[in-house]
Image (cartoon, rainbow over all chains, first blue to last red; front, side, top):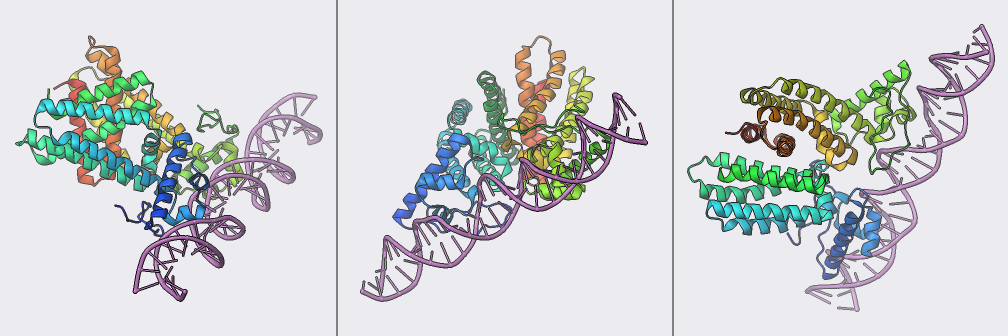
Length: 213
Length: 213
DNA sequence: TTGCAAATATGAGGATTACTCATGTTTGTG
DNA sequence: CACAAACATGAGTAATCCTCATATTTGCAA
């Protein structure tokens, strides 16, 4: 991933390709750009984020910004990509060691709590995943992320229920995962108490599906 | 609703208010504007819809367009509002007569099929609800719609399970509904076959939650 | 019928903002 | 040290949402 040009354009149309930073100096500048974007999104949302502001806050010119990111979406995409990579590592680690139903129960419950906590605490993640659906590249990233996470879950299910139809397990895992994300989005857009109730209800439903009664 | 000025702005900031069409002539023109917008969204998506094109295709000036819609979002919002009103009427009618578990099973299953069919067949609805999350007014409309639909479901559940905790039933209904929409969105963004499988799996899960084993 | 206020219609132009590109500077390397 | 490739710059371009001053039409009271 390091050294790869930043893409993330939509419509299948590849935006004019951009250089990947190869020197120490430019790598640091790219970091500053991402940090600036992140801060601005946290303050006013990605929609209100202005490219000029990102450049200014990062202490670079607007031209430098576009040297490494083909367009505005690509910056947001790059931030999203980091979040998913982080999450996936955490999820994989958490599910890898599960070997029985009770273990899955505990690991899953904990994962949901962590995810919910991040959604509540991280305004940038929240903003990006909220706007996800409007952007094709982000939608694809999210789908890929869901599939990857569901894959971890599928692996566990196959271990626990070796006789079940593998395709059905995959469908279940993907669905459970996607529903989790939908629940989170709903939960953070209603009051805190109702949100907590919804997440708790989701946990019950999902676990019933994953480990049975 | 008729005679109400078209709003639908976001950020809590009310965009400059617009006149509601009061004469026959202008009501027809507003219809043409909405039809034009709908056609353009069907062709290239709401993001690519240009206000100038809407006006041109409706055979009105750009100024007339803005006479009745405070901004671009308001047009999309107005279309979305029509869809939700239609759907709600259909859903309410379908669930109103349910009186036993088997009836719920049949009605719910049919509703899911209808919804899924509409998602697959209506590009405008699909586009608008895809982009929903990016726009606060639309997000609120969708939440209100979900709540209204969940309310119909809650009413049924209360009838079927009079001893259960009403608050829990409400949470369940809202969650089931929201998960349905999430499933639809996922289903239409993957291949047709996988989409069908996901919807079928959702139906099973939801019914298990709604009417038990 | 006529006079008039309110409603409706118009489109050139203001304002914003994502993005380009010609030009200049820095860095690593033979 | 020369030189190519990487990097940096910001004034300017293009696209598009939306405004507003002005003109026309409609409904209605006198």
